Image: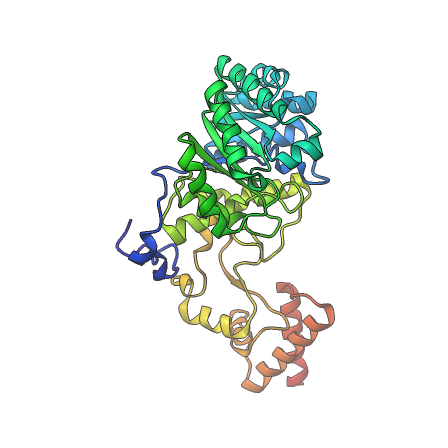
Length: 410
């Protein structure tokens, strides 16, 4: 960690993040791994459909971004999914490739056939969801888990046990279930699953500590965004020593989605000084690939990958930018655009523009003007933008400016 980790040539955040009193509460693992679930949980978002070729392209993008593990899909879903997983494994892209399966031996056999090295195995874990949603006797969930995880291990697979609805289960009951699976079946890792995104960040600390008091295996964080807590909860879990974070590109996933990789990784890097080893400069390109293939629009102000994050319209901010220059951008932005593969910051023009940005633009166009003429151009730009409820393109700006100057000079 550098002398001033909050202020580098790439970012400028709050020094308070690194106060001794804050650092004393953090217990991050030496290496945090990213387990990407875009191709499985991400595709469970309503209306998202990935073809075999889509999945391969996304897997290649994930590998280029340095993701450690890719959950390539659930073989039992369709022949197309099974074929995609096999092809991703065959390409040997670099990340470890996992499949997802129910705690059923037949599901595991299909995973083995794809050639993956690991499998995430799900089973309902809260008494109420077992009884009401699955309508199983409680012992069935336990016996299926023991039998299938033991079989997966016997086939040489790394096994991550994935208790559905973990966060709404009775703590002792579900930990008893998990302990039996670990003892009588097999478990290399345990996913802390907040299926419905219902844990608060403060309860997350309690959750992790209760599990660690009973379970000594590697822990993995799999959280959802139903009330927007996925990023905060993932970081809280990691700060308690959880070693793996499950994320999706853009946070796509069922209902409100999964924890987004880009925001979580950037928060860890800049606010905590924790480098996951990802290729952050690939984030923008990867996000737009997934947006295209999933037909999921990216809000222009979305953290990390929004198209307009480094666009400056406000008059006062444009003045700051002109004063600071492109050589000192972290006075105006928490991190440089190139850190995440974004395009350089630029001043844009619309209803929120100020006189300084208009003067600068006129000078760059080589147009002569007086103070009064610049104010008239500003008024014309604001009116054009207001009437159309959008920014001006460069050509539109030039035409409005030249037409206005011609009128006032006539």
